[in-house]
Amino acid sequence: MKLPTITHIRAYSMGGAAAKIHGQGGGDYHDQGKDHWIDNHIATPMSKYKEYEQSRQSFGLNVLGTLVVEVEASDGTTGFAISTAGTIGCFIVEHHLSRFVEGKRVDQIKLIHDQMLNSTLFYSGGGGVVINTISAVDLALWDLYGKVVKLPVYKLLGGAVRDEIHFYATGARPDLAQKMGFIGGKLPTHWSSAFGDEGIEKDIATLADMRERVGDKFWLMFDCWMSQDVNYATKLAHAAAPYKLKWMEECFPPNQIESYRELKKNMPKGMLMTTGEHTGTLEGFKELSDAGVDILQPDVGWCGGVTSLCEIAAIAKSRGQLVVPHGSSVYSHHAVITFTNTPFSEMLMTAPKADHVRPQFDPVLLDEPVPHDGIITAEELDKPGFGVELNRSCPLERPFEH
Ligand SMILES: C[C@H](O)[C@H](O)[C@@H](O)[C@@H](O)C(=O)O
Ligand SMILES: [Mg+2]
Image (cartoon, rainbow, N blue to C red; front, side, top):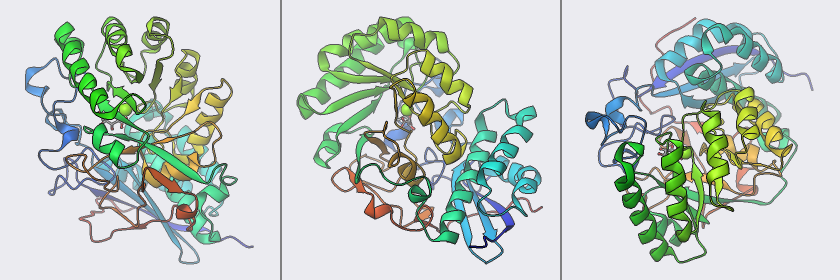
């Protein structure tokens, strides 16, 4: 089969500080409207500042906005993907990365990936918005390739190793998630080292209440979003053990490898330590794996795309560790269903009260699949590419053209 070449790459943004319309959700799923659980006194490294304690949007968590990357082939087929990079990402795609994409064949994804990574090293530092942007291009290329050869991405990656993906839910209401058929509920912590022992008491009270509601078998986890120090995390883990907390997630910033190593030694035996959603390089994941992280949690839109996610999964596999990507919808589903060390996955509840299942990247992806009874089947993923289309009625802007 003679494969077409890529003739155009285009970048659009939605939301974020540069946009007129906010609270749309989308690729930057923290860019939600008012009274949303995801912006209600969640503990962060900024919690120590009174003015930034209540809301993560107040310190700019939704400042970037959604990046949409669209690629077009010489046969007219288009592919696209999204991530969290907004207008900055549009600039990088149009004025820098486009030169590595246009003119290549649709199957030259790994070559393009390596050129994007190496050509941006002088300003990416190996992570952050540059890697988010590269991830969106990589995902768009996989989508285009699948749509050209009329195969789902998971089949391009070697096929499913299981018939279904089972999900835990992240949100304020694990008790409701249990009723929806999820296998567990991950609670954001609302307090942190900045609040001392009182913070531990308050989050433990929430955990105890949830354990009462869900019974003994349902998984409960804490997501600590980089807000702790080793001593606080150690005390919280031991206080949580009687309530069968399954894991402590992202207690520290991504580069505090020694803190993770220390916490792993201090934690109650059997409790898992997880992290990775804000790490953007293979080297970073290797260091976390070396530090004893039990579950690596890359975000496929923030770690280098599917191409990088497959390499990260191999790092975990080489040590008998799991890779359970941070919630990233179809972009993660198509990869994890081909991974033997991903026994379950994450569904981020973006409904404002976490009381029903809303597509994570709503409203940007048309036909975005969601778990039913906590499950998505391989069959539901059986559509070309990532199986979704761009909702062109969204307020998308193309700020730069190359
Ligand atoms: C719920 C957490 O605070 C974050 O908002 C979430 O995006 C992430 O940490 C997660 O693991 O889902
Ligand atoms: Mg997390």
